[in-house]
Image 1 (tube, rainbow, N blue to C red):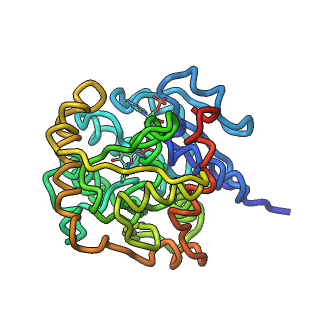
Image 2: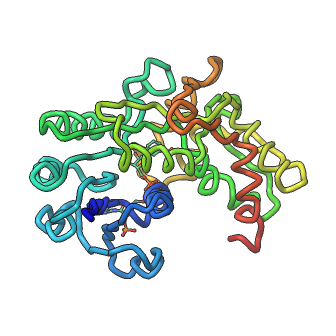
Length: 293
Ligand SMILES: NC(=O)c1ccc[n+]([C@@H]2O[C@H](COP(=O)([O-])OP(=O)(O)OC[C@H]3O[C@@H](n4cnc5c(N)ncnc54)[C@H](OP(=O)(O)O)[C@@H]3O)[C@@H](O)[C@H]2O)c1
């Protein structure tokens, strides 16, 4: 009897928020998985069934062992742009399909149309992929629900007021698990070539309402206080790059007033409704407690 062997999918950003979940969804679907880790010590945190390769997107030839014999690649680019063309050439020479984790920089909503250094990088990588003729899908999460862990968990764990700029700015946070499930589906099932998917949560919520939802998950009210953009800039000096801080402030300023852009892409692809932010908060409540830190 002839048996078709499914070639493995190589997941880059395998230790990151989305890549880590993509690995689980692919394994659930019975797809063999390779993981690219940048820091070799991170391999210990990946499932035992995964074949781990160490490689660096800034050293294109370091990817060769992981690419040889792979069928598809989940591409997460968090490195400087310099080596993107050489890496994508290597993908084209080795695999049939690529799914790229991008952002909604083409969506004509004010939130997505502010100056954004990542948007130019994402657009360049998309152009490079299109020029190869690889089977490709682009997935574009709006705002990941898990951003709130980095932003608000430190104050919430200490029982402090959440002080934040633009509490009235509306976004539609998308659950990282829904983004990863879409990525896995487009990697291992046919029918998504050429797909370009803006992924959002199901509802537009102000940032203050998102903090309320975390409070509801914890069973207590979390006080929210408006912070000025200048204070946010000075408080972020040691923890974030200035262009990233400016990008966030401009995007939030533009998102005060209009409801957030909401799409049906998650439901269209997965056949199930996207998880709400309340659901995300309920499932991650312990991460906002002192024990979860
Ligand atoms: N946050 C949002 O709301 C949002 C929205 C839309 C799009 N995005 C996009 O999502 C992407 C980030 O995804 P994520 O949050 O899942 O990632 P993440 O949690 O920030 O993790 C970054 C990953 O990149 C790997 N990495 C870093 N430098 C590398 C290098 N030189 N070579 C190979 N791998 C390297 C890291 O590996 P090691 O752990 O081994 O170092 C890690 O697995 C970005 O492109 C961002 O623009 C984010």
